[in-house]
Length: 349
Image 1 (cartoon, rainbow, N blue to C red):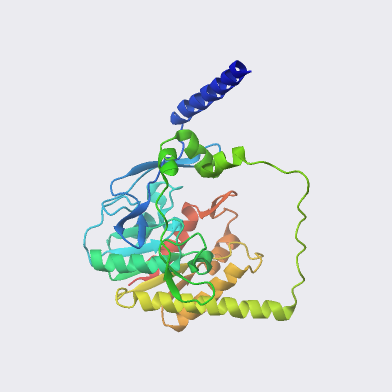
Image 2: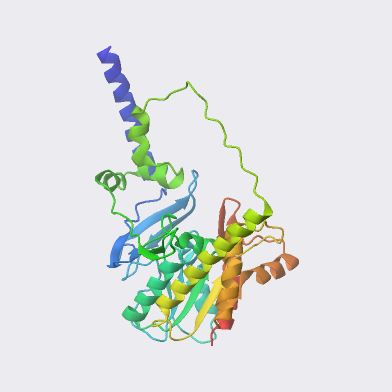
């Protein structure tokens, strides 16, 4: 019995070693090693770090990425230059699924009538209040005054604490008061798994939480009962209106906190480029209603807002070409990025 068990474990071990060696030959996403290297509220990469990115089980859109001198995924190092433009956002700004020449910073720089450097300060998995900290950092560290903020519809709701898309500052979900919610450092197990191609494939390509695999493997499974699906409660119009009022209050609180935070730092031109519905028939989800409310509030404060939706509608009227990377990846492709960056360049002086 023990011999059979030993042989079985040896066979499993051999398969794992073979899978590890094979995946090391393929463009599996590697560890990004993100942390608070340049600022206590800004999540970035180690300065000078290089890593591999790819998408899906079949390793699509493979790219080799590098962090610059300040830990941002950018093709140039950032030097103090008040003439430079800060491009702020999340994975839409980093755009690791695109070639370097097709990313927003490169396309914005090419679209500008004057040769001004564009500093891409992107941070995947972040939200609007995180953008305020990057504006503050770029002003203090690099002397930047002019900024373009590339927003997606979720950037407002994701600014609430616990959203999973917060690098530091956020608003409490109940009180809407500002809090700090930094991400914890990796555990010893995660630090070890970062260097395994098999673990990275499971986590990065297949989206399996590898840290929970041991617990799941030894957890007992009960088949005595089958959990019933929750029955959705009927929501009347009064409840929908009440919920929307709460959402509007949340948006107003996030917007107020954002503008309060950036006031000493965004002293030049500030342009918002706001992603939206790429399909005219898209349902009005809560996140899309949030972005609509933001566009109104920002314009009421006198800021320049490039609303992407009219640009998308003009494009769809003239072309059948998609603006998304793929059906599985809703990030903007080079054509979509170009539409928005051309508009942003025209909005800058």
